[in-house]
Length: 120
Image 1 (cartoon, rainbow, N blue to C red):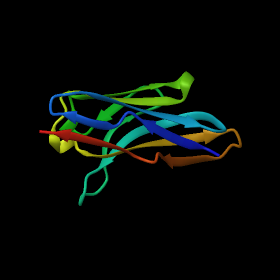
Image 2 (image 1 turned 135 degrees about the vertical axis):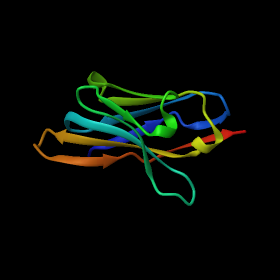
Image 3 (image 1 turned 60 degrees about the vertical axis):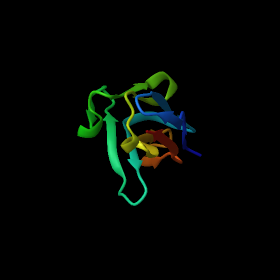
Image 4 (image 1 turned 45 degrees about the vertical axis):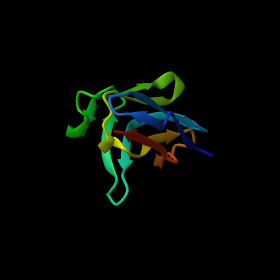
């Protein structure tokens, strides 16, 4: 069974930092594109940051200069370093990955979500 397991969410004061991790487990052959999304109450899920297999990155305008996405291919893990957090960053954060499995199947997977709450 293939899973994306997230960790690192929590409660932090405005201006603080958090680091999210997302590890892919199971019969994963390779990880193509990975990304982080978030969904605040009453709002649609939105892309926060993405990283390609070659390391190219893209960010939502609202987090540019504050968030950094990275990946460790040896560990099948991606990270989201979040600095200078603002109350409007409060949301459930989801990791997403386009995985190629050992069976030859290629599919898209979501993590279970982790809550990030930023207090003012």
